[in-house]
Length: 139
Image 1 (cartoon, helix red, strand yellow):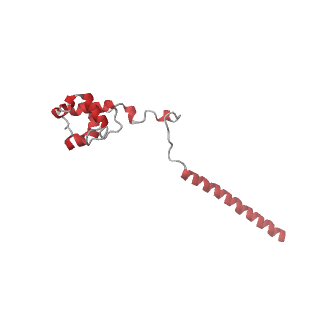
Image 2 (cartoon, one colour):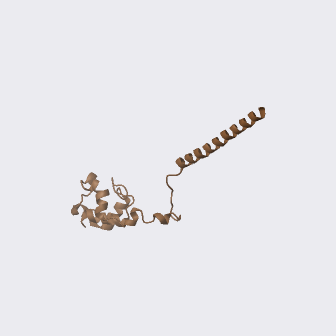
Image 3 (cartoon, rainbow, N blue to C red):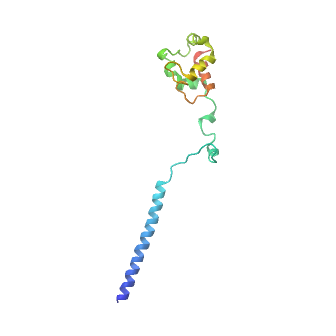
């Protein structure tokens, strides 16, 4: 009888230990699923970069002058904030550097008075800034 009790107790312990091991594995898998990364970082030159190439705004081509003015320049240049030449006021734009577009572009790139460098469009190319200047000035 004692041997039988020992065997039953051993079998019961084996079942408990095996059940706990199975539960722990399932729990670890659930935890790993919850903790997996949401996304990945892909740098230029990585193989994954080819998968996302062309997906950004740069692939759409340069923005038009009207787009740049509407999104970045009009806040100040539509009302002439702090002496900024107003959109469409060719005389005010011509009074600056005699209307020399290259000089106006240099000011836009470097910033002038209250206008920060590149206006508020930190990612605008020089060509996009020039298109915006032409759009605003009518020159």
